[in-house]
Image (cartoon, rainbow, N blue to C red; front, side, top):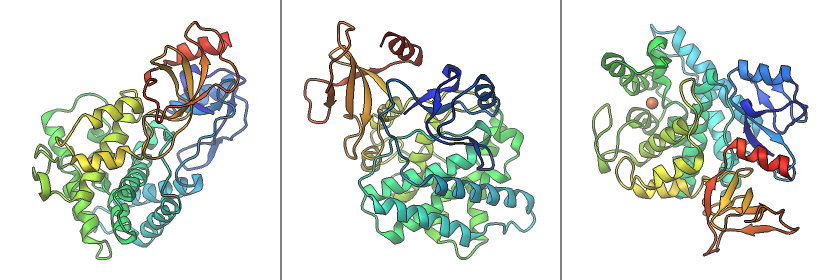
Length: 368
Ligand SMILES: [Fe+2]
C-alpha cells in the first residue's frame, strides 16, 4: 500500500485502509474498489489523500503505531470535550478528565508495548477534522519522543494529557479567526495568541489534572530561543515536556494538508527540524523525536543517488533516513531484476536523492 493524493486517484484502485468520516464512521472500507462517485465524495469531504494498493505497492504493509479503533475513539473523545467547552462558557468545567485519562493511558500502554516502533504513516484526516486529528497525533508523537527520552510511565501519562489538551483553549477563540484561511490581522493574531492562557484556565478548573499537564498546555508555544509566547520564556525555563509538545505541534501542523495549503512532505519537515539546532527547540529533544519518525514513509517512491528509482518498503526505529527500498527501475530506465531490495542503513555510497512527484510515479507504473 501507499498514500496517494485524491486528485490522482483512478477508478478501479483498491482502498488499502479504512477512511473515516467526521464521526468516526467508516466512509470507505478497506478492500473497496474506487469509482468516480467515491473519488468525488472523498474530495467533497475534504479528504486530500488515502492509502491504496497498486502494482508497485501491493506487498508493502504500513501500520499505525496505535490501534485504528483507539485513534478513532480518542479523536471522538477530544471532539466531545471541545464541543462541551464551547457550549459551557460560563462555568468552563466541561472537561471529562476521567475519560481523557483512560484514553491517554490506553495510548501510553500501546506505545510502551512496542518501544522499537517508528512512525511510518501519514495520518489521514479531513480538513474539517483538523483540530481533533491534530490533538490525537500530537499526543501520539509526543509520547514517542518521551519514550525515546526514556521517560517513565508516570511522566508519559502527564505528557499525554498535556499533549492531548494542549490546544483546548482554541475552543474559546472565535471560530471566524481560528479558521480564517487568509493572513491574520495583528489584532486577530493577538487573539489567537491567547489560546495557551485559555488552555491553562480551562485545565485549572479541574483539580484532577496534573500541574505538569497544565504547564505543557500553557507553554507549548514558548520557544527555546525566547521568541515564543505567551511569556517569552527561554532555555531551561521551559519544561522539556512543553518543548516536546511544541515541536510535535509544529511538525504535525506543517506536514498536514489544510484548507489553505498542501502539507510539507515528511522528508522536508525532517530536514527543517534537523537543521533548526537549538533555535526553536532544544536539540536533544529534536534528535530524540526524529529518531522515531520516518523521513521517507513506506510506499514513498524515490530516486537514489545511483539514479535508480525505488519504492520504500520499510523503516526501522533510530534509522529515520535510511529505509529498506526495492529498486523499480535501473539507471538506464530498464526494469530491475528480482531480489532487488536494498537496505540503505549501513550503505555508505547510496542515499536517497529526492522524492518523486505523483505524476512521475504514474508514468513509471504505466511503463512497468
Ligand atoms: Fe497551540
